[in-house]
Length: 61
Image (cartoon, rainbow, N blue to C red; front, side):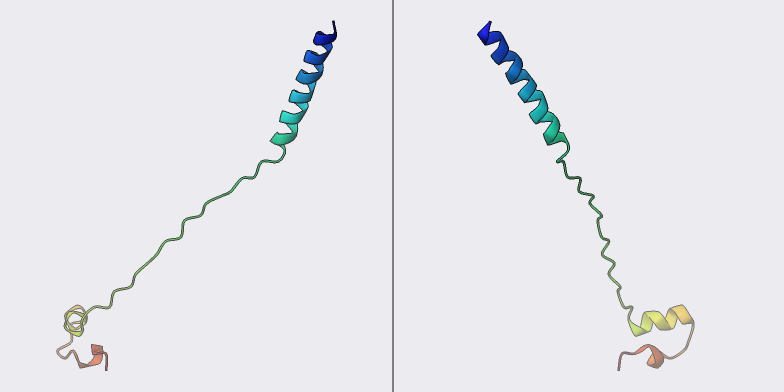
């Protein structure tokens, strides 16, 4: 009879302990960031796109 009380008490403790752990969960939300690389096009290519005759306006310096 004494072991039956210990089994019930252990079961009650285990249920109480496991239910208390359920309230302590942490949820992390992962938001990936997108890396966008901007490539500069060469002056000659920009000249072709705009239809101009000179690439001087599109040069870096």
